[in-house]
Image (cartoon, rainbow, N blue to C red; front, side, top):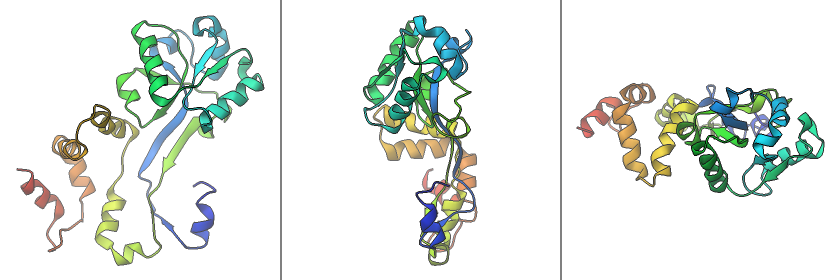
Length: 224
């Protein structure tokens, strides 16, 4: 749990659900897997590939936390990155540069994160050995659902649904892909439920309709 929310939890102004909704989020430097297969697997390996990389690390928007952390590594010559340049643009600009490099099988290091469709569209490998330069535990993160302190008592049915809603980063990355392709969000959600009945059953376990009937059975009938 971050320091940002801790004071509110301790003051009992919000409540964090007992079970996280996502346990395998991650944000750190990454490379195409074909480059990892050549030996670029850790932060310490980057400097050895300086020539192939053109001395560049691709980041996102100027002023972002990730870019600030990468600049700090370069300024301190951490991992021997003192001669490297951070290329700042935008999420779309960075991904376009990665896409060009991948199509040409060229070397590229970039700021990656999951969940995100980039993990579906690019065979990518996250670098280890960061010494917490981009966050603790190699940039891993856990996502929790937060409610008002009395929400479970006021809305037990919805609270049960929120408790049931757990995801993996891989699944969320795939869920995001249709939106990246500019498809309708509601139709994309319906299609996911249709294609993944096990998720539908798990998320709606114990959840009821307004008239007290099992929500899962009602959803199945409405989708036929």
